[in-house]
Amino acid sequence: MSTPRPRSREWIERLIAFPTVSRDSNLALIECVRDFLAGHGVQALLVHDESGRKANLYATLGPRDRPGIMLSGHTDVVPVDGQDWRSDPFALVEREGRLYGRGVCDMKSFIAVVLAFVPRFLERKLKTPIHLAFSYDEEVGCLGARRLIAQFDAMPVRPAFCIVGEPTLMQVVRGHKGKLGCRCAVRGLEAHSALTHRGVNAVEMAAEIIAQLRRMRKRIEKTGPFDDGFDPPYTTVHTGVVRGGTQLNIVPRDCAFDFEFRTLPSEDPHLLLDEIKGFAERELLPEMKTVTAEAAIRWEALSDSPGLDTDEEAAVTRLVKQLTGGNSAGKVSFGTEAGLFSEAQIPTVVCGPGSIEQAHKPDEWVTLEQIARCEAFMERLLEHVARG
Image 1 (cartoon, one colour):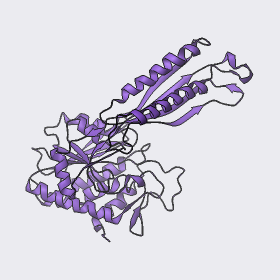
Image 2 (cartoon, helix red, strand yellow):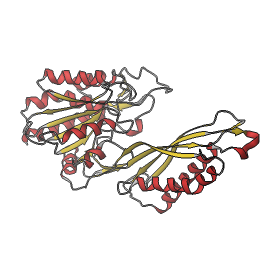
Image 3 (cartoon, rainbow, N blue to C red):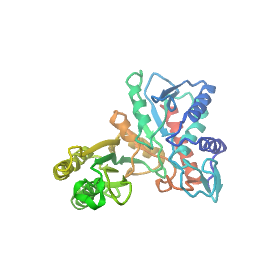
Image 4 (tube, rainbow, N blue to C red):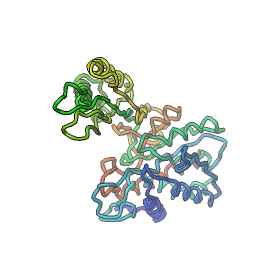
């Protein structure tokens, strides 16, 4: 069994110990990395959110006068609330060839290996620079990456390529779906449940919209469009959260639900959103307003991230296939920050240790073998950028 090097293991343990759940600050982790880089003579740029409680980190290893390869990872993790963990989620544990901890797969192990290689990159007097980009709030809509990307236009040099280290079992991924997450809030009219004709049942109206979303999903499953590179090979529609009503004998005034479209890169999710809005405003709202003028259906975007569709023959795809030793590049249905970097005209692929199947679960894990494979990848990248 392959064993990670001590420096990588130390960094994984250190990063896991920071409880950087998206609702909380990531500054302690970011400042730890900033201070580590400063100790090696590397100045890092911190790009904070509006509250000042969170920050992205951007730094360059090697020459600063030419574009290089950006290694990107998010520092936030999903919550552990209500999950049944066998051990402390924020204390690294090793069992039977696996490392356990929140974020060990998604995606602090990649960041840890990158940091472990910083001294090696600096020793080699790189001809092609390595850019480090560590973000906040990827898990709640890729918020940090957007603020970081906004800084690129003011920089004298932009990255030439980007590798996002999300878990792909160290296989090259050149495409992923986009995601549009929305909230629909229905306002009806309260009444006694014995007098339903005097009220507008917000739960029922919401249910009608949810049922229409399901009909849209079933239609797309049958008619496409399709792309066999994805699993499933079509755009998906999903309702995940519903809140409404107060008690059984009251016609509910309010109901809100959250839903999402995960679209093929070739599809525009806003067209699907327009479709469901049109249904609600055409089929439901007029009926609701015959009872009360206060009836309303409101829509709010929760997240909006583009898909990724990097060409198989793009220079970044060919390079990362060479670094992994792979012959092909695949596609995945989950989203990443890669779509945003690609949209910003930075050619991007996804490649990192671990499997997405282990992400977000209790007892999240990554194998030691995957960490070792990531280290081997970094060794080959080191030789590539040292040669220029």
